[in-house]
Length: 283
Image (cartoon, rainbow, N blue to C red; front, side):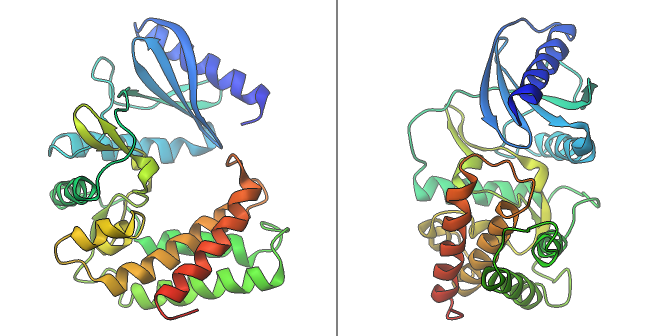
């Protein structure tokens, strides 16, 4: 968010928590992109504040969290002191979550794989008809790439690379639509979305929940994690990793993308796509 919008988002997050009876003396910006994460102290709440255009996405994320809390999934939970729903204030959608103080630096691959195993088991116990198939998410990314008005700075060569990777790999991995091996997934469980806390590893950012093979999730994690996950198909993980990096790159080349260090990640994302394609023999 630009500085003016960020100030409004901070004010909306602070006022919402205060009106719900939570004490807010300080607001710390934890993350700022197209939506922001704010740590509110001393009530120790993480407020996720998004423009009202993302209201449906915020409501979906809260619904995923609410259902998974009932099946003991390893995830960051909604704040238990307030009603589990999205609040609307000043053109922002605001959800309030428990803040977890990070501990340590990295999560060991074995612990990462164990968190995946428990999270996927919990997801299999949840009925969430609204969750899209991963190919639906790929289709959105492909639309960004194929529409020059949406990604005007993407060169023809890079546009072809991303379009081909997204289209062909999505079709190959998702043959037959929702296959027999598909289940509910986190959707983007990269290291930044798995917190190392005193309660152990906890997944955050649940709004990307979708259906697909577990390898689609595993492809977001360090390679050693996939090797430790029982029954995973290593070749499918490699193909999913190439697809995931192509999706990541598609988001970075959007005209209105607001990710910090976007220019760096535009170049890095394309390099990661090429590397991942080489790994699965498609380079």
